[in-house]
Image (tube, rainbow, N blue to C red; front, side, top):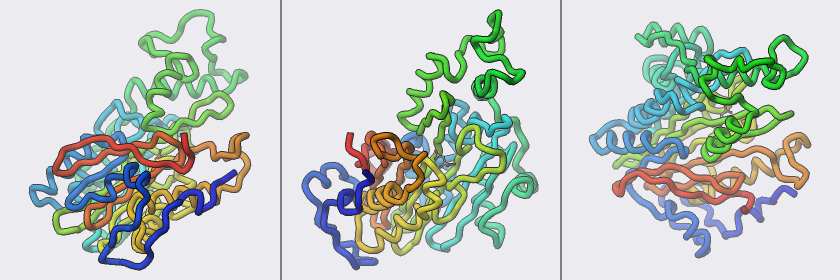
Length: 381
Ligand code: ASP
């Protein structure tokens, strides 16, 4: 059964306190589970694949950079990493084998956001989103227009597929159905995998399953009819020494998506949001669920009502679970069969996160350096 809001939040919550942020009475257990709620001062947090991102963002803010510039510079490192299958260069493609990227950034002091969606051939969509924010009167530019905007601003068109993502996509495509003209692994008379596969197994083989299991620590993997669908993204929220905030999210989105599908990542108020009077928030995981619950916006509003960052994330994660009505999105145990991870940083430097499934983690950097911290979940282990 879906948990009620009361199950999710067992603590009593202080209500009004827009700027004062009195510490909310936390139970001892909750306090141990969420040390970030007691943190004060500049901080950068990110999804668990974002250790290099928070390090760079925090270092830049330390040297006086704007929090939005710092967040974008941080996530750019992950976009450039060919081994991260969820973002930028080396991200997994759509069903036609084309990588379409989504990104957004919001800047607290000006309360402006910029975003691009379904952009092809451009490695660094977060930096393009920042230019939409800085140089245009628009919030979101999509598809061909976004690519032309990027190229007009000096970005180069590149092939974003790596050997690894091409192999994974080809195997996914071949294994989709055993009646089409693409041969499945067990239909081949001889090992046609090399040299295309260079020793790697296909999606669905034990080797690929192991690879997906490793990825599942930081990415959500759902199996539909034996086919793996992965999501993964980076969000980075920043708070500088003056309490100015920003949030940035960038992704290649759901693997094998229908061409043109846009997730939550480039949607202001869903995949990220900030309000300079309150704080910043972001989301990764099943984008449709985050859009349907205005994830980023709801977290910031919950902090404005007086919830700590961790409590705000848990409340919204619980709302997502409670509002998931479709049977196909629940397992036999009644639990939702997807994950969402939420992140929040308040303007005084308190930070936290929450996930639906147990085992959620996120990256943090402050004056004590970068580290991974665990976050509470809607469902217990
Ligand atoms: N939220 C992203 C999307 O739905 C994917 C993810 O974060 O894993 O496109």
